[in-house]
Amino acid sequence: MVFDFLKRGGTVAATGPTATKASATGPVVAYHGSGRVAWSPRDVVSLTKTGFSNNPVGFRSVKMIAEAAAALPLVLQDRERRYEDHPILSLIASPNGAQGRAELFENLYGQLLLTGNGYLEAVAAEEGLPLELHVLRSDRMSLVPGADGWPIAYEYAVGGRKHRFDVSGHVSPICHVKSFHPHDDHYGLSPMQAAASAIDVHNAASRWSKGLLDNAARPSGAIIYKGPDGASMSNDQYERLQDEMSSYHQGAANAGRPMLLEGGLDWKPMGFSPSDMEFQKTKEAAAREISVAFGVPPMLLGIPGDATYANYQEANRAFYRLTVVPLATRVAASIAEWLSRYSGEKVELKPDLDQVSALSSERDNQWRRVSDASFLTDTEKRAILGLPKLSEDE
Image 1 (cartoon, rainbow, N blue to C red):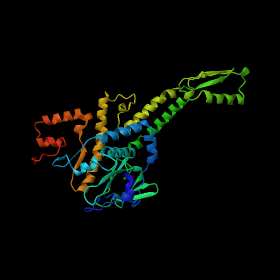
Image 2: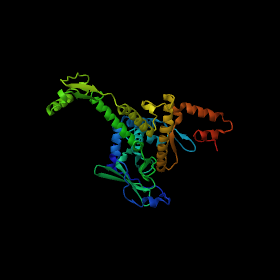
Image 3: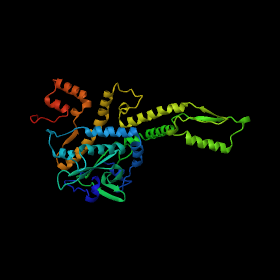
Image 4: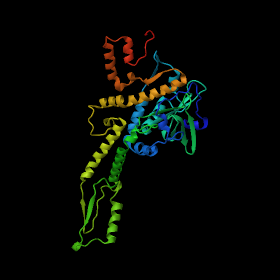
């Protein structure tokens, strides 16, 4: 299981000289909390419940991005060639006994989208590449900065138990991938945090719609009492009428039931007020804000009122080009750099865009333009296309 590290440990011994961090601002950053846990500024658990578990737009946005990015084929190469078979590729294809490549990356992308931070643990061998890779929950992880501002350890807490990962060696057992955060030196900013206000509005609108359904999906009305000589209802009559309205005329099961009014009572329905009429538009506007924060075109989520893209195909292409590919490229590059320290060889891991059907037309045009450029050599053309040099190239 992912959390077996609580039994087995995860510290990796240094295999080379310790890298020196030379930034002059490091001691200033760490001055206020050297050696102590730097806590995340947001309540990740509550935000995840309201924005992912209880919000369909946030849920679908995260699922779409994570599943699409995890499904991208990856290629491994160095300056000389592209590998068809390599220990890193084998490790990624079967990272642990409970997950395959797609499950591992979907979990990692999901954590990154929900919290702004993704943590990958390496179960170390005595030498060489790790034996297994595991994604750790971001809400349970805390970073411990050192005197130079760089992390010296990560603490993982489950209930009342903690496990400390020492990262002071040359090879770290934790790969920390984080999103850009302008006001935090140690943690990333998630799209969920940026969309928090829109999520609150959308959830409130959903509760309003649910309340409308609970009241037979009708606009409110008024029962007018016209007593003799302007007399008002007695307290007993008023309470009896309230009980009958609650028991026989509210709720979906009572929709359409005729109302029996005694003498002096008259029902006057009220149409939707201007605020009621605008409520659905407010909900749709909040849904668009949530999708924009995650980088998912509203058209792909079925949100009405968005005509930014001419058709679904263009929206899907923009989704991959602007959201999925940049995320997958950044995460793959971080993992490649991390695993390269274990293997001792510099390699590059990146998505294979030639196998992404949504980008096929763009890739065809790029290949055609590069192929028709007679002023470029074959080596220059391969470099433009992101391909390694041929063995005969200088």
